[in-house]
Amino acid sequence: MSQSDTSNIQALSTEVSQLRQELQLRDQLVQQLSQELFRLVKGNTSFMPQKPPEPEQDTKQLQALQEQLQAIEQQVTFYQEQITARDTEIYQLRQNVQELTDRSRMLEQVVQELPQIYRRKFEERMAPVREKVAMLQRENRQLQAELQSVSYRLALKSRNANHSGIDLPSFPRPASEETSISPVPNS
Image (cartoon, rainbow, N blue to C red):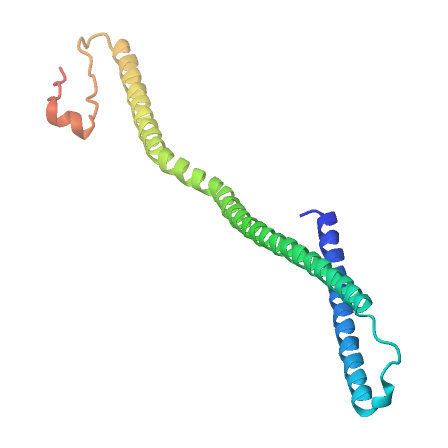
């Protein structure tokens, strides 16, 4: 709701309350005047006007006052309808704001939790990879040690030309291969 709408509603509310106050004041004055006239007329019979009252003029004034009153009542009704419509609109907008605020908070919480979720998922996926890398590094070190050992033995064998056979080491196999393939004997 814009600021001009709010100021218009406030101005209309002020005007309506002023009109209501004027109406109440007029009603009170009419009541007081009628009571005073009744008291004067009842208590003093000589107070009767000398010339007959003009009913047409009184009727016209009364009719004019009734028309003014009806116009004011129509304005009051119109302003009340506008106020009711604006109140309904304000209520709906407040509900929308509350829903959007709740949704925004939820999304902010999800966004804040996303890095932790991604880290955890990444760690879960990396654990088997790290285990495999560690296993491969152990196996690589073992193979390098065996290769150095074989190279050293070959160097010794080549110095000793009288020995014709080469001693090859037996490599340990992983548990899954040992059950299916039998080891090759050394010569």
